[in-house]
Length: 393
Image (tube, helix red, strand yellow):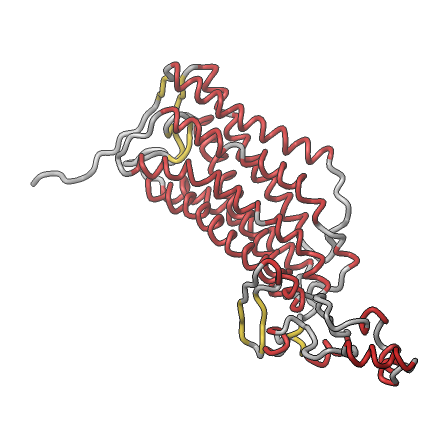
């Protein structure tokens, strides 16, 4: 009987050639840049308490911690660069664990931030301190479980060490391809894809494109000249957070742009294809700038976030409007002023109509001045209340 068992091979030493050594040096430099940017932000930044009643700061600092761990794993490559080779052993296994920890944690905390913002800006469900503590514990416990399960449960003597030489550094070895895919790449793709959908839903909701009528969701798209009508479906929170929502979209966009090149390169290698060395180096350099890019986006967009302490509670229900009212853009369907002929007739005899006297108590003179104005007339708040009803949970 022939033996059909698979023989697994694994490296114990990897010697760099000139191109590999230079490439790993550039990759390590990118990781070092990200690590310095994160540390400078943590030390120099003095975050004001502009996010009360939200968990944004706690989750964002968890993301920065994940980026720092990710960058630290990359900077460890300098040890191999100085030696000119990689040696399988405890330092190599440590680097593999740190790199997976940083990559998975970055994906998980990016997703949690997107989910939290989706909750407070789209769903408006209440958040609690207990929920914050539970999320922090669950997030980091999930990362630890994903990383530990490999060497503790999945690793086998036949396949060799779980964390060891993998390419030009140490990570999950090629003898565990499914684990590479499902215990890292899956979380990264899931976080980037679902996070992008969350942010787009938030943006459409606070802009007024996505709204509810009679407990049913509706979507509307208006020409640029009529986009002012979208304000009908906004409340004070939506109006205040609109600029912030527009800029928050850059987080998943940047993460996706950084993630796609290196993922495509890895997929080509897994399928047996050959990726040029310069392409591998370029995609790895880009990927290890994740922390640096997150810091830049944070510094560039934080000015768009209003002081939410001055806003109503995020759990305040939105109002649902009747379909006919939303379709009209909140514009009165009848004129409130005099016709030109009637106005001219009154002026000729020196009379002031009683209707104008009564209306002036409620509306400004400019409102009744002409009916030929192209500026739409907005309904008073008490009329808006009549046409609306609280949004159901």
